Amino acid sequence: MTNQIRTTTSPEELVATVRDRYGKIANAGSCCAPATNCCGSSPVGLSTGLGYKAVDLDLLPEGADLGLGCGAPLEYLELQPGETVVNLGSGAGIDALIAARAVGPEGRVIGVDMTPEMLAKATTNAASAGAHHVEFREGRLESLPIDDGAIDAITSNCVINLVPDKSKVFAEIARVLKPGGRLVVSDVMLDGELPEVITKDVMAYVGCVSGAIQRDDYLAMLAGAGLDEIEILKDVDFLATVADSLPKEVNAAMAELGLTSRDLEGVVRSITYRARKTDIAGSQL
Image (tube, rainbow, N blue to C red; front, top):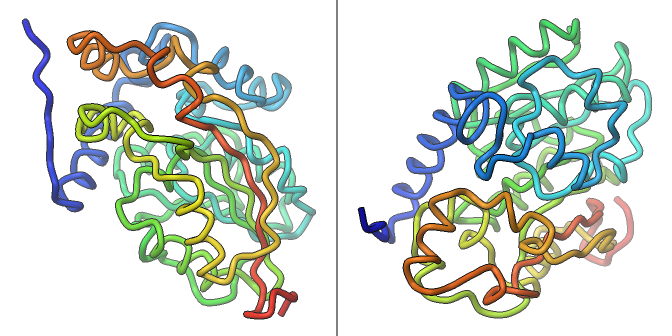
């Protein structure tokens, strides 16, 4: 059967598609089946390749790592005991549960996700891990269910990319961070143009490819929200790193049109960055 290119222009349609797909991933245990991610490699193998430490992954309950990230941001967040940290797009709980060990029982971890199936899975995983200081809240990243100035640190892994209005996400991050609060995020950005068909394909969007925007635009939105001291910690060719891990729908769409990951070489970047909430002048509040 010929693969059909699915296009949409409505942001809310995109959000609904993302929610639906990730709900199915939660129910399946991964993109395709419990033992594999979308391409057939194990989630653990993909995560270690992205920078996660095997010792951290080994301590997670089964099913917490679905192999959905594009980096390993917690390595750089330098969490301290007693801190309150938020995980944006917490999925099945991999980063929230790793963060929970860093902040200790005197700290607090809040995961935010818009997919009920992922929230249920994450809550079960936290209970299995005995992580009683972790909670998961249903919400959109453009309207976080968190009080103003309540958070020490924020992390996210390949999720902001999926939000149609990223500027609202950055404004919300600035709102909930304490003065001087920090974030470390892994996300997908572009250094060039994607073929139009990939940009418009919904399944590519959900697969963290066409939801990406240009690097300069992304970082300008970040700074515009008052999130400064921006530092790029890691910058790699995303498709070169996970060429075998793209969702099968993305590969099918590209193959039908005679495209391969080589046609996108160097354009799609997996970038891990650090930033801090500052005042307009750029000094810490």
